[in-house]
Length: 112
Image (cartoon, rainbow, N blue to C red; front, side, top):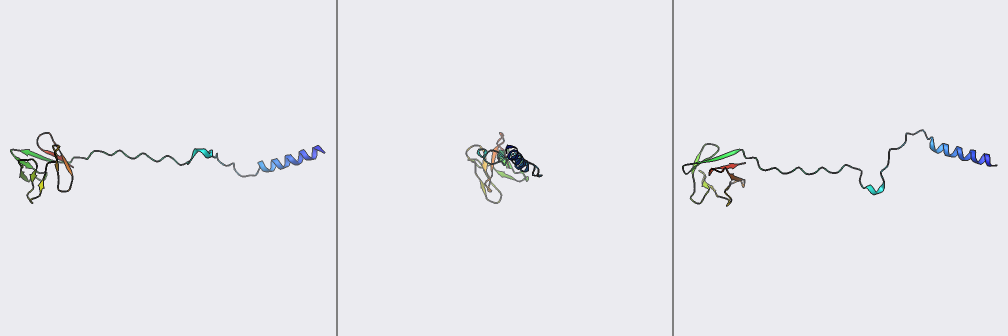
């Protein structure tokens, strides 16, 4: 009686193992969390790129386009269209569009 039950059990186990389908890939344990890649770190912010130069010579500033304006006694200058470009209190100026220019170390400014 033992032989038929062992054969029946062997037949049942072999049917489960040889299903003909390729084996499934590994499954991560449930405690690992998401299996997606970690999000990329944000790119570091870079300093503004200064591409324009306002130069100073003999009490006048020369703009990047070649026009010249008089320097104001308290710092900064007034553009030919009447717009005042004030000093920012740290050696730079604030342009009418809100951009900040930094000192070039020679009374002129480097602007983005």
